[in-house]
Amino acid sequence: MFGRVAIIGVGLIGGSLGMALKRVGLAEEVVGVGRSEEKLRLALEVGAVDRVTTALGAVADAALVVVATPVGTVIPVVEAIAPYLRAGTVVTDVGSTKAAIVRAAEPIARARGFSFVGGHPMAGSERTGVKSADPYLFENAYYILTPTPATERDAVAKVRALASGIGARVVELSPEAHDFYVAAVSHLPHCAAAALVNTIGALPEREALLPLAAGGFRDTTRVAGGDPALWRDILLSNSGAVLTMIGRYRESLSELAALIAAGDGAGVEGWLRRAQQVRRTVPAKSKGYLPELYEIVVTVPDRPGVIARLAGILGDAGINISDIEILRVREGEGGTIRLGFAAAADQEEAVRLLRASGIETRKR
Ligand SMILES: NC(=O)C1=CN([C@@H]2O[C@H](COP(=O)(O)OP(=O)(O)OC[C@H]3O[C@@H](n4cnc5c(N)ncnc54)[C@H](O)[C@@H]3O)[C@@H](O)[C@H]2O)C=CC1
Ligand SMILES: O=C(O)C(=O)Cc1ccc(O)cc1
Image (cartoon, rainbow, N blue to C red):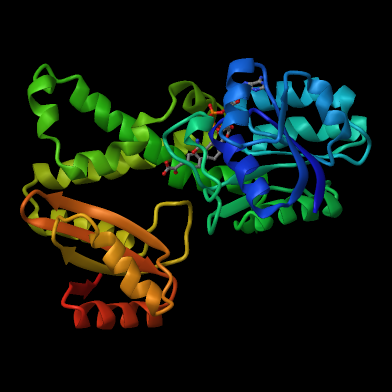
């Protein structure tokens, strides 16, 4: 149990963290600290924090301070709160890049007698603001901590307790390894999605063709809806690794272009097959690096109460639904729903029970 936890920047991530802390009762009090009174009022209204203030001095009596502001503002915020922090206070951040932040925060922490532990929850979305915050956002998500040999282990243990207390799985990486990994699995995908949208957006015919976009275009470009200022900070503060990954991506596209230009069918198919095989090994759920779920797909009529019926059959048998998604619904034709379970045995039992109730069900 923590005493007071101060969250600076109560947006999507800070707000979700506050809600999660309150939900599990891990903190005596969660204080939201920010600059905009309007945003802070909203944070209070949605129950993300217990109390709000625009005064940075509020960090003085916190046991733990979480800086949840955009990457480019983390160090200025750490510098601004440093004079108020008591010796022994643990400060962590949630920024999407780590090397530059940790490198700059450590000497400030050392000089002032507080501890800094870099952190990055691998969960979120393309939305921003506390109105999109979710108390369950971190459940089962990976939460990366980036201590260095100079980081006090007691401080790391405290942030570990925070992350695991809200249901996340903690992984430790060096700040540099972290930045390379996320350049590959998060920053390059963001660049690629935005480039894809910009490529289509630059076509004179875009207004005629964008409405025709099928699920594939939407799936591959969702993250391009993210906040440009937030992503500007991320890409610039991880420029080395991001540029390396953009270079590799260019090479990969050039390889494909050359195969297509040569009319090399076997080559194109082989190139696509490699991707298909690797894609199959990516966990189905999109919340960070998640454990694999055991999935089924059910086809049901498009009628009120259908989901309640499915949930009732599984709930009565004590089977927990870990994930649910409506894949598509066509009026008059019915819908397809994907359900995910944590264990293979639950998947087997769900298929058996639903089929026995006359519901078309298959494993995915
Ligand atoms: N959006 C996502 O999916 C994820 C974001 N992150 C990281 O979390 C951090 C926050 O991102 P989001 O919550 O998505 O953004 P957000 O825009 O929803 O929240 C940021 C909050 O910080 C406040 N803020 C900005 N500058 C400030 C300052 N100088 N002092 C006090 N408050 C300030 C803003 O008013 C806003 O309330 C970023 O560093 C981001 O890289 C990490 C994991 C996932
Ligand atoms: O929207 C998604 O699927 C994400 O992957 C969200 C996200 C954005 C930034 C991060 O640093 C981590 C996760």
